[in-house]
Length: 98
Image (cartoon, rainbow, N blue to C red):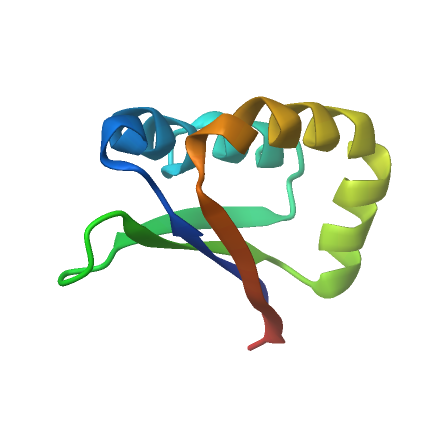
């Protein structure tokens, strides 16, 4: 299993749109589902810090994730640009092997 974790800071007025785009049934998950190697997304909201979120994306392997990125780079970049206005800050926490 290969896991990619991102942290986001979201303005209060953008929370609903952010959750719709980044949640397990959101725009990102729909894009990722084009790969049979994708294993799902979790969206975690910080219990104490308003507007603070983590996403956890799971893939069968690092190779599967890299193949997806190579094959869908244009779609990934288009969606990333479309979602830029939803976040105040985003930080890649890391990519991990389980």
